[in-house]
Length: 267
DNA sequence: AGCCAGGACAAGT
DNA sequence: ACTTGTCATGGC
Picture (tube, rainbow, N blue to C red):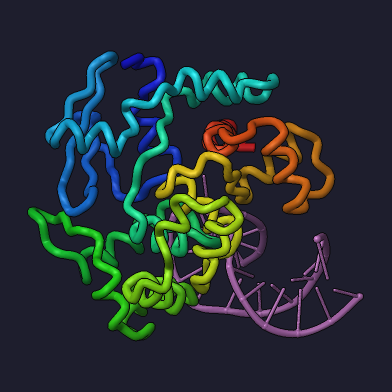
């Protein structure tokens, strides 16, 4: 592997995942698919305490990110974004966890998102060891009422979390469509969940389904478009045209680089 | 203290 | 198809 295109810190702190934390020794510990994983990077060496196949799948280690990052370096802004974020890898994340996490993310900030998710896991996940808990199953959350989630302090998102859990547990959401159907059909399928609008849908498609053709547009990306690309109006149609013409089917990767750039430069 | 956060929704042009 | 007010909470 080319470690110029694998940076653990950037990958885990670029906002695509919420259950990893840095330790005093600079390693990271996270809970993934019911197991506690510790990973550390020393330059051109990655040390992990989990199964190799599992690691390579989760961290997308067998994909050529040099090729991807070069394909989206189409202007000066992208050159800077790739220079900063070329070590980011798109994680292969669990579908249900991604749905719930990004429902919680709406109109919210990252530290609070992480806190709400941890509280959800502590209460309704399975205890693994120490203070680590698995992400709960949709079947377990589907049986609850919004009042059972009030302790999360997630506000109006409580009913969205339950709606998503019910529809995923009972098979109403077809994950084969989300994974394989044309992107508009996939987006429509995931949007059947209350609280899943265009932006959250695209995050789920990108971070769980590896659908690289989407371009999740949040407040940071809107800042990028106005500050760096001179957009005066930000209609969904114009943004989609921009993303597809510039980046094609790698728009989602470009979006991650731009998101990371915007947050690092604090525009 | 007040603005803001990886927005969605309903109701209105 | 686009615009606006509202939503619950707490980080900063």
